[in-house]
Every structure is written in C-alpha cells, then in structure tokens.
Amino acid sequence: MCARDIQFKKYSNCGHEILIEQKIIDCQLPICYYSSNHPADHKKGPCSCTRWMTNPERRVVETPDGLCDDCKARQQ
Image 1: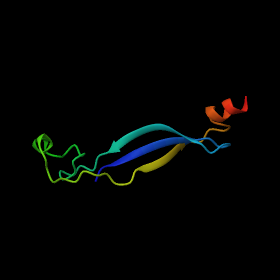
Image 2: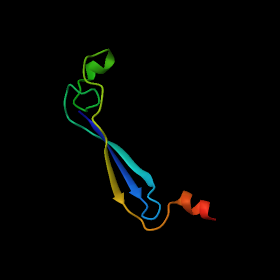
Image 3: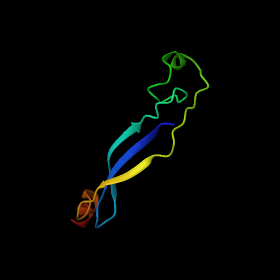
C-alpha cells in the first residue's frame, strides 16, 4: 500500500520538530486506490480497492543547532 514520507527538521536545544516536506510513496499496486497504477475507470465509481495507507515514514533530515523560532520568540 502507498505511504506518506514526512520529513522534519529537529532543533537540538528544544527538541521541536518542524515539518519540511510531505510526499506520497507510490506502491505501484493496481488494487491500491492511491497508487498511480490504480485503474482510472475504478475512480469514477465505487470500487473495492484498498483505500488506506500504511503508517507514515517520519524522518528527521536536518538537526539545526539552537532553538526553533517559537522558542526564540518566547525568550524575548
């Protein structure tokens, strides 16, 4: 089944995570409603194809030093 790839940056001092990007990982299965290989004629009406995604993949792709903008603002 398709899944979401969610990328964050996590600030080292406060530990807050900020969303950077979110995209769909295509499973390429024709029985998955969200896949690019799902038959187009199925999307016109009701079909019995799977309509859920697997658990999202959460990835920290940046770890900046310091505090996030919200924590910086609270300190001022």
